[in-house]
Length: 158
Image 1 (cartoon, rainbow, N blue to C red):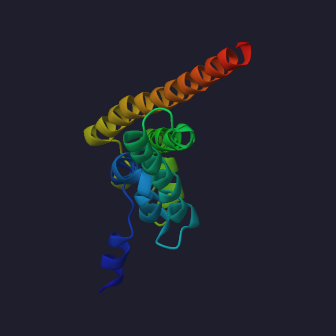
Image 2 (cartoon, rainbow, N blue to C red):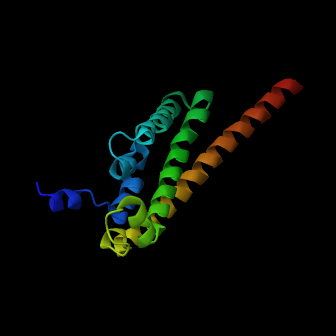
Image 3 (tube, rainbow, N blue to C red):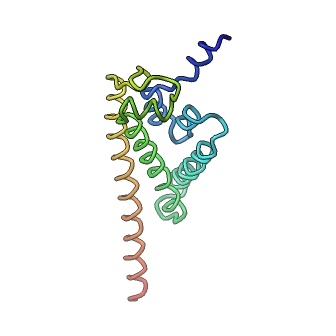
């Protein structure tokens, strides 16, 4: 391969990064796209995702009384919200800043860092999904915690 082809393969698009963070963020795909397969944070992303999915599975099989699922399930919601925030931050970066950080060999105004309609669509989807995931995780956690406190209070009073 020529050096021009190799350089073209290493160009990192802001739009692709935003969509990868939105769709594959809980698995760390956006980190691997931006920083390569050796990125430690990318490899750590699946851990809270898997724990959250395990909490969801426990909740479905054992019901709402399973206390471990109360702790594990919010991890999934928080992980989704975190990766949606990353998608929003990627999409909102200026082309100059994006290219300076992720495409240092390119001109500041290069099209790899430009904002397209598909970038805006990723930002809107990330905002909707991230807000829903965050609010759901918080509501579930607080509801189960307070119901457990009320139950404990009733047991104490008897």
